[in-house]
Amino acid sequence: QVQLVESGGGLVQAGESLRLSCVASGTILSANTMGWWRQAPGNQRELVAISVSTGQTIYTPAVKGRFTISRDNAKNTVYLNMGSLKADDTAVYYCNQGRPGQPTVPGPYWGQGTQVTVTT
Image (cartoon, rainbow, N blue to C red; front, top):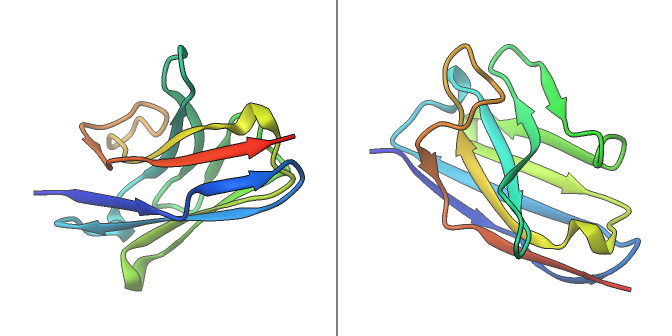
């Protein structure tokens, strides 16, 4: 069974940076699309960034240029480097293994989430 465990969230001030990690087990990371999603209070879960197994990356416009998704297949780990954080980035961030051929559609496997809070 696929398990995803996120870490790295925290409380930071606007303009600072954080790096989130997602360690996957029960799956072969190199063969799969992996993504980061987030959900703020009262909002639906939304796509943040996707890393396709081909190397392609996709970002939501709100984070493009500030966030970078990367992966270490040898460690079965996906990262999200978040820079120039804004209050609007405050949310619970989730790791997800995407669906084959549909990189922006979330798959059934989610981590437990990690809270990111950005203060002004």
